[in-house]
Length: 273
Image (cartoon, rainbow, N blue to C red; front, side, top):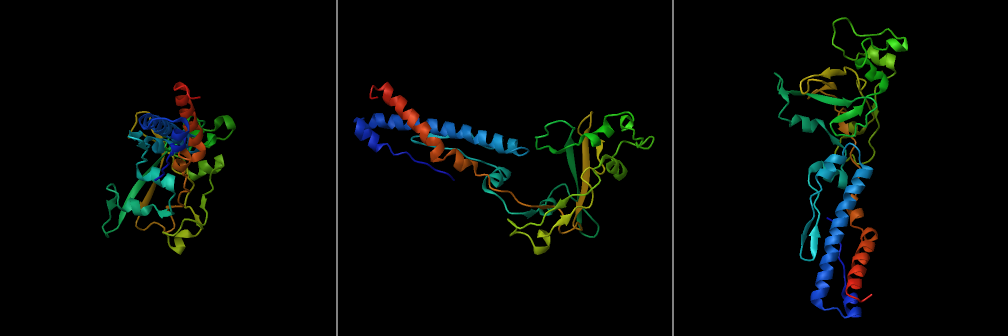
């Protein structure tokens, strides 16, 4: 929670303003200050967040203004994790609790996770997209004969639905696997093993295909299977750095000029300046 207060007693004494009038001025200051802080909170999120921008801004509630006080509330688990920061955590724990998981005969569980990818050249800043496809990878889904113009005759097997293989990725220069760095900060919720550097099992675009379940035009997606047998070091989120937009939007540095402007404008209207 971030709070700020305004003390106008010196102004009241200097100009001999009645308490009732001073109360109205104070109310104007509160209302304008809350309004400006709300706008600044949106500005900071829009300027500093990308894929999480929409989920953060949608959860900034409208200002609630009362008598000489106002509040702005940020709701939602992820928005508050972004605001306050979060320790590294094991994503598999969330999958294990999902209603979409399937149970195995031995008492274990598994779940298939889909990742949607934006087309090459797009901004791809919506949270529905995991990545923006590289141009060379996207070419396989845009041409009748993939890569023919580049002089590469590598294509999909006759009659096979287009699906990116390791051979395609190697030809496109995206066949290497990613590496998650060792977690040295915000890892108090993990075991020593889970903090170690981890090399992923497959390239990010392996198995990319056009999926038609949710759209007639299809979405370009990859799918990964997660289960109770997945590597203990896989699916570890490294944590989130605290953005602390709310303290910035309610800081003295930001609000003081706004408060002074409201006060001066009101005093001018009263003929006191």
